[in-house]
Amino acid sequence: MRIYLAGPDVFLPAAARRGAALKKACAHFGHEGVWPLDPPPQAPAAWAALPEPRRIALGNEAHIRSCQALVANLTPFRGPNADPGTAFEIGFARMLGLKLAGWTNDPRCLATRTRAWLGPAARRDGDAWRDDEGLLVEDFGLTENLMLEGAILASGGFIARAETGARCRWDDLAAFERCLAAL
Amino acid sequence: MRIYLAGPDVFLPAAARRGAALKKACAHFGHEGVWPLDPPPQAPAAWAALPEPRRIALGNEAHIRSCQALVANLTPFRGPNADPGTAFEIGFARMLGLKLAGWTNDPRCLATRTRAWLGPAARRDGDAWRDDEGLLVEDFGLTENLMLEGAILASGGFIARAETGARCRWDDLAAFERCLAAL
Picture (spheres, each protein chain N blue to C red):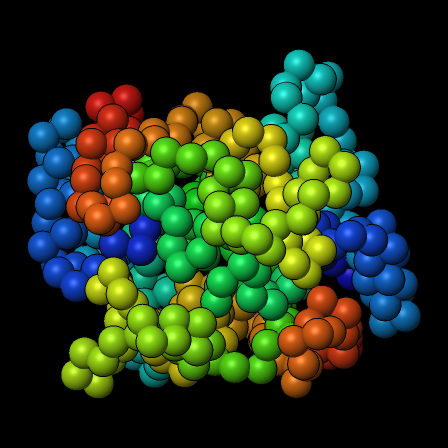
């Protein structure tokens, strides 16, 4: 199965090495991993006139269209939530009908993690919690925002949570490999 | 034009009032606003057996499928980035071929805002910046992650930035109205 490797992993210091590690794990499970920084499957001549970020965006959309599945690294990124680029790609792949799976090295559910991140700024409002701007803390016991988790479950997939300490949350691939084994 | 109103606005304390305000602005510009908390256009009987967050997710997907455009509130949500649920919906609508637009009440570009949010944790790495975990700060001069902004631009839309102070960043609708006027 061709699997698009969504996640903020492209921002890691040794991104190329990370891409190679994720692809190697895919191959071990009989899959072909597609790393966002791979050359896109097709690059129409018109793209040459576009600025670099536009070409990367269209290239990644083409990568996703060439796959049968998407596995997303949902480990919280600069705050309690998943990287928005990753969330975008899950939405794109969901509409395309791909099989979806997610993994995270933060074992907490969204509400617990958001309240911990807010700290004293978290405010009780009846049975719910709000942040210091009054915005509700979504609390359905899910790992991520209901749109992301709902799409992953609706596609037949699941979210694997690893019990990883904060110091290796960008290193441990055990939860990722559980996704690969299930696909 | 039927416009899906994506954004973390559903988490605001007076969410129903906010939905009504966004829909009223749409009507002023000759559009029909679709608020995520509206009853979904169709609800198959099988959904009744699903837990509430799954029904909400499928309902919002159905809402988006019923629209010709999506306007997303990209105002940073608990960190320097857009709400992941909103990012998901932009990706879903992008694959569906909808006209897209975004608005934000934070006038800064992604890199500036991320570095401000990181504060002393931001580290120089040649011409680039990284966070305290070593992850790169994306810096293409864009308002948001290149997947979101690339999709919005590729659909023919744009991102409207408002110069709003922190105290009214969830209130000011001027940038939203600029999106509506352009659609």
